[in-house]
Length: 369
Image (cartoon, rainbow, N blue to C red; front, side, top):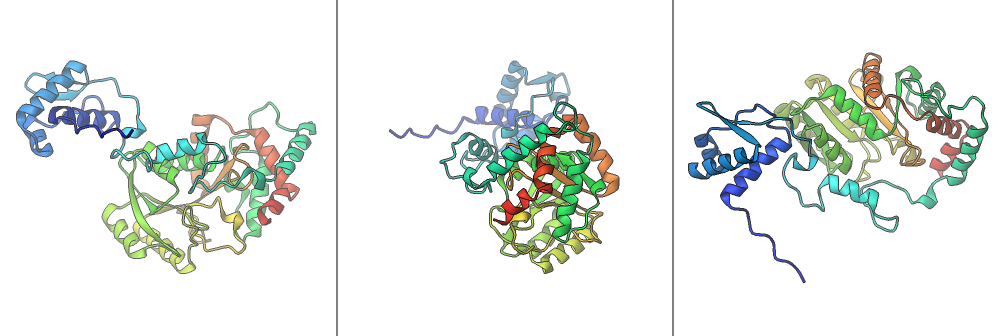
Protein backbone atom coordinates (compact mmCIF):
# COMPACT_ATOMS: atom_id res chain seq x y z
CA UNK A 1 0.00 0.00 0.00
CA UNK A 2 1.34 3.42 -0.98
CA UNK A 3 2.14 5.72 1.91
CA UNK A 4 1.00 9.30 1.94
CA UNK A 5 3.75 11.96 1.65
CA UNK A 6 4.84 13.55 4.90
CA UNK A 7 3.32 16.96 5.54
CA UNK A 8 5.64 19.93 5.09
CA UNK A 9 7.40 20.94 8.29
CA UNK A 10 6.08 23.82 10.36
CA UNK A 11 7.70 27.19 9.86
CA UNK A 12 9.83 26.92 12.98
CA UNK A 13 10.99 23.38 12.14
CA UNK A 14 11.61 24.39 8.52
CA UNK A 15 13.76 27.32 9.57
CA UNK A 16 15.71 25.12 11.97
CA UNK A 17 16.31 22.64 9.14
CA UNK A 18 17.52 25.47 6.90
CA UNK A 19 20.12 26.55 9.49
CA UNK A 20 21.22 22.97 10.21
CA UNK A 21 21.84 22.35 6.52
CA UNK A 22 23.96 25.47 6.16
CA UNK A 23 26.04 24.33 9.13
CA UNK A 24 26.30 20.71 7.90
CA UNK A 25 27.40 21.89 4.44
CA UNK A 26 30.04 24.09 6.13
CA UNK A 27 28.60 27.17 4.47
CA UNK A 28 28.34 28.53 8.03
CA UNK A 29 31.44 27.31 9.92
CA UNK A 30 31.89 27.79 13.69
CA UNK A 31 31.93 31.47 14.64
CA UNK A 32 29.71 32.58 11.74
CA UNK A 33 27.20 35.23 12.80
CA UNK A 34 23.67 34.25 11.81
CA UNK A 35 21.41 36.84 10.16
CA UNK A 36 19.66 39.13 12.62
CA UNK A 37 16.15 38.23 13.76
CA UNK A 38 14.64 40.82 11.45
CA UNK A 39 17.00 39.94 8.57
CA UNK A 40 16.25 36.21 8.78
CA UNK A 41 12.52 36.89 8.99
CA UNK A 42 12.62 38.99 5.81
CA UNK A 43 14.92 36.53 4.04
CA UNK A 44 12.79 33.46 4.78
CA UNK A 45 9.36 35.11 4.69
CA UNK A 46 8.44 34.24 8.29
CA UNK A 47 7.56 36.23 11.36
CA UNK A 48 10.16 37.55 13.75
CA UNK A 49 8.65 35.41 16.54
CA UNK A 50 9.24 32.29 14.39
CA UNK A 51 12.92 33.21 14.08
CA UNK A 52 13.17 33.83 17.83
CA UNK A 53 11.70 30.39 18.55
CA UNK A 54 13.91 28.64 15.98
CA UNK A 55 17.08 30.33 17.23
CA UNK A 56 16.22 29.57 20.86
CA UNK A 57 15.61 25.90 20.07
CA UNK A 58 18.84 25.64 18.05
CA UNK A 59 20.72 27.25 20.94
CA UNK A 60 19.20 24.69 23.32
CA UNK A 61 20.50 21.93 21.00
CA UNK A 62 23.98 23.47 21.07
CA UNK A 63 24.04 24.14 17.33
CA UNK A 64 24.26 27.91 17.82
CA UNK A 65 24.94 30.19 20.77
CA UNK A 66 23.66 33.60 21.78
CA UNK A 67 26.12 36.37 22.59
CA UNK A 68 24.69 39.20 24.65
CA UNK A 69 24.23 42.29 22.51
CA UNK A 70 25.88 40.66 19.48
CA UNK A 71 23.36 38.14 18.12
CA UNK A 72 23.57 34.41 17.41
CA UNK A 73 26.65 32.53 16.21
CA UNK A 74 27.37 29.01 14.95
CA UNK A 75 28.81 26.93 17.78
CA UNK A 76 31.87 24.71 17.38
CA UNK A 77 33.42 22.34 16.61
CA UNK A 78 33.31 22.14 12.82
CA UNK A 79 30.46 19.86 11.71
CA UNK A 80 31.43 16.63 9.91
CA UNK A 81 31.16 17.16 6.17
CA UNK A 82 27.84 15.75 4.92
CA UNK A 83 27.86 15.75 1.11
CA UNK A 84 24.14 15.07 0.94
CA UNK A 85 23.54 18.42 2.67
CA UNK A 86 25.52 20.42 0.10
CA UNK A 87 23.24 22.03 -2.44
CA UNK A 88 19.50 21.56 -2.75
CA UNK A 89 17.79 18.38 -1.63
CA UNK A 90 17.44 16.08 -4.63
CA UNK A 91 15.13 13.20 -5.32
CA UNK A 92 17.24 10.10 -4.61
CA UNK A 93 16.72 8.82 -8.16
CA UNK A 94 18.70 11.79 -9.53
CA UNK A 95 21.04 12.48 -6.61
CA UNK A 96 24.57 11.78 -7.98
CA UNK A 97 25.74 10.37 -4.66
CA UNK A 98 22.84 7.92 -4.54
CA UNK A 99 23.32 6.97 -8.22
CA UNK A 100 27.06 6.37 -7.66
CA UNK A 101 26.48 4.17 -4.63
CA UNK A 102 23.68 2.22 -6.27
CA UNK A 103 25.82 1.58 -9.34
CA UNK A 104 28.42 -0.02 -7.07
CA UNK A 105 26.04 -2.00 -4.87
CA UNK A 106 23.58 -3.38 -7.43
CA UNK A 107 24.37 -6.69 -9.10
CA UNK A 108 25.55 -7.20 -12.67
CA UNK A 109 21.98 -7.88 -13.83
CA UNK A 110 20.88 -4.29 -13.13
CA UNK A 111 20.86 -1.66 -15.85
CA UNK A 112 23.34 1.13 -15.11
CA UNK A 113 22.91 3.80 -17.78
CA UNK A 114 25.55 6.49 -17.71
CA UNK A 115 28.19 4.41 -15.92
CA UNK A 116 30.08 3.54 -19.08
CA UNK A 117 30.90 0.04 -17.80
CA UNK A 118 31.27 -2.92 -20.12
CA UNK A 119 29.97 -6.36 -19.15
CA UNK A 120 32.51 -8.61 -17.44
CA UNK A 121 32.31 -11.04 -20.35
CA UNK A 122 33.61 -8.32 -22.70
CA UNK A 123 36.77 -7.70 -20.66
CA UNK A 124 40.16 -9.39 -21.37
CA UNK A 125 40.08 -11.66 -18.34
CA UNK A 126 42.43 -14.30 -19.80
CA UNK A 127 44.99 -11.64 -20.70
CA UNK A 128 44.77 -10.17 -17.18
CA UNK A 129 45.34 -13.61 -15.60
CA UNK A 130 48.31 -14.17 -17.90
CA UNK A 131 49.82 -10.78 -17.01
CA UNK A 132 49.33 -11.45 -13.29
CA UNK A 133 51.22 -14.75 -13.59
CA UNK A 134 54.03 -13.12 -15.57
CA UNK A 135 54.45 -10.30 -13.07
CA UNK A 136 54.36 -12.75 -10.14
CA UNK A 137 57.29 -14.66 -11.69
CA UNK A 138 59.34 -11.49 -12.29
CA UNK A 139 61.99 -11.19 -9.54
CA UNK A 140 62.04 -7.40 -9.99
CA UNK A 141 58.25 -6.90 -9.77
CA UNK A 142 57.05 -4.48 -7.07
CA UNK A 143 55.22 -7.10 -5.00
CA UNK A 144 55.73 -5.43 -1.62
CA UNK A 145 57.29 -1.97 -2.04
CA UNK A 146 55.78 1.46 -2.58
CA UNK A 147 55.64 2.86 -6.10
CA UNK A 148 57.65 6.01 -6.95
CA UNK A 149 55.91 9.35 -6.39
CA UNK A 150 54.97 9.79 -10.07
CA UNK A 151 54.33 6.07 -10.62
CA UNK A 152 56.31 3.28 -12.28
CA UNK A 153 58.47 4.72 -15.10
CA UNK A 154 57.74 1.67 -17.28
CA UNK A 155 53.98 2.31 -17.28
CA UNK A 156 54.39 6.05 -17.78
CA UNK A 157 56.57 5.32 -20.83
CA UNK A 158 54.05 2.80 -22.18
CA UNK A 159 51.22 5.32 -21.78
CA UNK A 160 53.23 8.00 -23.60
CA UNK A 161 54.06 5.53 -26.38
CA UNK A 162 50.42 4.51 -26.75
CA UNK A 163 49.17 8.10 -26.80
CA UNK A 164 51.73 8.77 -29.52
CA UNK A 165 49.96 6.21 -31.73
CA UNK A 166 46.83 8.36 -31.34
CA UNK A 167 48.69 11.49 -32.44
CA UNK A 168 49.13 12.89 -28.92
CA UNK A 169 52.76 13.76 -28.19
CA UNK A 170 53.31 13.41 -24.42
CA UNK A 171 56.57 13.36 -22.47
CA UNK A 172 56.50 10.59 -19.80
CA UNK A 173 57.87 13.16 -17.34
CA UNK A 174 54.53 14.98 -17.59
CA UNK A 175 52.49 11.91 -16.56
CA UNK A 176 51.41 11.28 -12.97
CA UNK A 177 49.92 7.85 -12.25
CA UNK A 178 46.90 7.80 -9.95
CA UNK A 179 44.64 5.11 -8.52
CA UNK A 180 41.80 6.08 -10.90
CA UNK A 181 40.55 8.79 -13.20
CA UNK A 182 38.40 10.03 -10.33
CA UNK A 183 41.46 10.40 -8.11
CA UNK A 184 43.21 12.35 -10.86
CA UNK A 185 40.26 14.77 -11.02
CA UNK A 186 40.14 14.95 -7.23
CA UNK A 187 43.79 16.02 -7.19
CA UNK A 188 43.09 18.67 -9.82
CA UNK A 189 40.16 19.96 -7.76
CA UNK A 190 42.34 20.16 -4.64
CA UNK A 191 45.01 21.95 -6.68
CA UNK A 192 42.84 24.40 -8.61
CA UNK A 193 39.71 25.37 -6.68
CA UNK A 194 38.47 26.54 -3.33
CA UNK A 195 34.94 26.21 -1.90
CA UNK A 196 32.59 28.51 -3.76
CA UNK A 197 34.57 28.60 -7.00
CA UNK A 198 32.49 28.12 -10.14
CA UNK A 199 33.14 25.11 -12.39
CA UNK A 200 31.59 24.45 -15.80
CA UNK A 201 30.31 20.98 -16.70
CA UNK A 202 28.25 19.61 -19.56
CA UNK A 203 24.51 19.15 -19.10
CA UNK A 204 24.11 16.20 -19.01
CA UNK A 205 27.44 14.95 -17.71
CA UNK A 206 28.86 11.87 -15.99
CA UNK A 207 26.98 11.76 -12.69
CA UNK A 208 30.04 11.29 -10.49
CA UNK A 209 31.49 14.58 -11.75
CA UNK A 210 28.64 16.23 -9.83
CA UNK A 211 29.31 14.20 -6.68
CA UNK A 212 33.05 14.97 -6.79
CA UNK A 213 32.52 18.69 -7.34
CA UNK A 214 29.99 18.74 -4.53
CA UNK A 215 32.62 17.20 -2.25
CA UNK A 216 34.87 20.16 -3.09
CA UNK A 217 31.96 22.57 -2.50
CA UNK A 218 32.22 24.05 -5.99
CA UNK A 219 29.46 26.05 -7.63
CA UNK A 220 28.44 23.77 -10.49
CA UNK A 221 27.36 25.52 -13.70
CA UNK A 222 25.81 23.30 -16.37
CA UNK A 223 26.10 24.09 -20.09
CA UNK A 224 23.75 22.27 -22.51
CA UNK A 225 25.57 19.67 -24.61
CA UNK A 226 24.88 19.30 -28.33
CA UNK A 227 25.86 16.43 -30.67
CA UNK A 228 29.18 18.16 -31.47
CA UNK A 229 30.03 19.66 -28.06
CA UNK A 230 28.72 22.36 -25.71
CA UNK A 231 26.27 25.05 -26.79
CA UNK A 232 28.85 27.76 -27.49
CA UNK A 233 26.54 30.74 -26.92
CA UNK A 234 25.63 29.39 -23.47
CA UNK A 235 29.27 28.44 -22.84
CA UNK A 236 30.51 31.96 -23.53
CA UNK A 237 27.68 33.51 -21.51
CA UNK A 238 28.57 31.29 -18.54
CA UNK A 239 32.20 32.44 -18.78
CA UNK A 240 31.16 36.09 -18.62
CA UNK A 241 28.60 35.63 -15.85
CA UNK A 242 30.29 33.14 -13.52
CA UNK A 243 34.05 33.44 -14.25
CA UNK A 244 34.58 29.67 -13.70
CA UNK A 245 37.94 28.27 -12.68
CA UNK A 246 37.80 25.30 -15.05
CA UNK A 247 35.65 23.37 -17.54
CA UNK A 248 35.41 19.59 -17.07
CA UNK A 249 34.27 17.42 -19.97
CA UNK A 250 34.55 14.13 -21.84
CA UNK A 251 35.52 15.18 -25.36
CA UNK A 252 34.86 11.90 -27.13
CA UNK A 253 32.98 9.77 -26.77
CA UNK A 254 31.05 11.92 -24.33
CA UNK A 255 29.41 10.28 -21.30
CA UNK A 256 26.43 9.88 -21.24
CA UNK A 257 25.43 11.22 -24.68
CA UNK A 258 28.03 9.53 -26.89
CA UNK A 259 28.61 12.87 -28.66
CA UNK A 260 31.98 13.71 -30.24
CA UNK A 261 33.55 17.14 -30.00
CA UNK A 262 33.95 18.90 -33.35
CA UNK A 263 37.27 20.44 -34.39
CA UNK A 264 35.60 23.86 -34.74
CA UNK A 265 34.21 23.81 -31.21
CA UNK A 266 37.51 22.55 -29.81
CA UNK A 267 39.27 25.57 -31.37
CA UNK A 268 36.62 27.97 -30.06
CA UNK A 269 36.81 26.53 -26.54
CA UNK A 270 40.60 26.86 -26.51
CA UNK A 271 40.36 30.47 -27.71
CA UNK A 272 37.76 31.32 -25.05
CA UNK A 273 39.84 29.59 -22.39
CA UNK A 274 42.78 31.80 -23.32
CA UNK A 275 40.67 34.96 -23.28
CA UNK A 276 38.92 34.19 -19.96
CA UNK A 277 41.81 32.54 -18.10
CA UNK A 278 39.89 29.26 -18.03
CA UNK A 279 41.53 25.90 -17.32
CA UNK A 280 40.31 22.89 -19.29
CA UNK A 281 40.17 19.38 -17.83
CA UNK A 282 39.72 16.74 -20.49
CA UNK A 283 38.51 13.37 -19.22
CA UNK A 284 39.63 11.04 -22.01
CA UNK A 285 38.94 7.62 -20.53
CA UNK A 286 36.82 6.45 -23.50
CA UNK A 287 39.15 7.72 -26.23
CA UNK A 288 40.68 4.30 -26.84
CA UNK A 289 37.31 2.99 -28.02
CA UNK A 290 37.18 5.41 -30.96
CA UNK A 291 37.88 3.93 -34.38
CA UNK A 292 38.88 7.40 -35.58
CA UNK A 293 39.90 10.06 -33.04
CA UNK A 294 37.56 12.99 -32.51
CA UNK A 295 38.85 16.47 -31.76
CA UNK A 296 40.51 17.09 -28.43
CA UNK A 297 40.87 20.18 -26.26
CA UNK A 298 44.55 19.38 -25.98
CA UNK A 299 46.75 20.92 -28.68
CA UNK A 300 50.45 21.76 -28.81
CA UNK A 301 49.70 25.42 -28.11
CA UNK A 302 47.23 24.74 -25.26
CA UNK A 303 49.19 22.49 -22.92
CA UNK A 304 49.66 25.33 -20.46
CA UNK A 305 45.94 25.38 -19.58
CA UNK A 306 44.74 21.84 -20.39
CA UNK A 307 45.03 18.87 -18.04
CA UNK A 308 44.21 15.47 -19.48
CA UNK A 309 42.87 12.56 -17.42
CA UNK A 310 42.92 8.91 -18.45
CA UNK A 311 42.01 5.63 -16.81
CA UNK A 312 42.06 1.87 -17.38
CA UNK A 313 38.93 1.24 -15.29
CA UNK A 314 36.53 1.31 -18.26
CA UNK A 315 38.81 -0.13 -20.92
CA UNK A 316 40.59 -2.87 -18.97
CA UNK A 317 39.50 -3.57 -15.39
CA UNK A 318 37.81 -1.67 -12.60
CA UNK A 319 39.63 -3.96 -10.14
CA UNK A 320 43.07 -2.91 -11.41
CA UNK A 321 42.66 0.62 -10.10
CA UNK A 322 44.90 2.86 -12.17
CA UNK A 323 44.49 6.18 -13.91
CA UNK A 324 46.80 8.93 -15.01
CA UNK A 325 47.02 12.69 -15.21
CA UNK A 326 48.90 14.68 -17.84
CA UNK A 327 49.69 18.26 -16.92
CA UNK A 328 52.24 20.99 -17.48
CA UNK A 329 55.61 20.40 -15.86
CA UNK A 330 55.36 23.19 -13.27
CA UNK A 331 52.08 21.70 -11.97
CA UNK A 332 53.28 18.14 -11.70
CA UNK A 333 55.44 18.44 -8.57
CA UNK A 334 52.61 20.10 -6.64
CA UNK A 335 50.13 17.47 -7.84
CA UNK A 336 52.56 14.71 -6.85
CA UNK A 337 52.85 16.30 -3.40
CA UNK A 338 49.07 16.28 -3.06
CA UNK A 339 48.95 12.65 -4.11
CA UNK A 340 51.62 11.77 -1.55
CA UNK A 341 49.80 13.69 1.19
CA UNK A 342 46.45 12.02 0.51
CA UNK A 343 47.36 8.43 -0.51
CA UNK A 344 51.16 8.41 -0.14
CA UNK A 345 51.86 6.05 -3.06
CA UNK A 346 50.20 4.21 -5.90
CA UNK A 347 49.66 0.48 -6.33
CA UNK A 348 52.96 -0.60 -7.84
CA UNK A 349 51.78 -4.16 -8.45
CA UNK A 350 48.73 -2.94 -10.38
CA UNK A 351 50.90 -0.57 -12.40
CA UNK A 352 53.29 -3.41 -13.27
CA UNK A 353 50.44 -5.63 -14.47
CA UNK A 354 49.00 -2.87 -16.67
CA UNK A 355 52.45 -2.05 -18.07
CA UNK A 356 52.79 -5.72 -19.05
CA UNK A 357 49.39 -5.69 -20.80
CA UNK A 358 50.35 -2.57 -22.76
CA UNK A 359 53.82 -3.81 -23.64
CA UNK A 360 52.50 -7.19 -24.86
CA UNK A 361 49.77 -5.57 -26.93
CA UNK A 362 46.94 -7.40 -25.13
CA UNK A 363 45.21 -4.18 -24.08
CA UNK A 364 45.41 -2.69 -27.59
CA UNK A 365 43.93 -5.88 -29.09
CA UNK A 366 41.11 -5.75 -26.55
CA UNK A 367 40.19 -2.11 -27.23
CA UNK A 368 40.25 -2.68 -30.99
CA UNK A 369 37.96 -5.68 -30.61
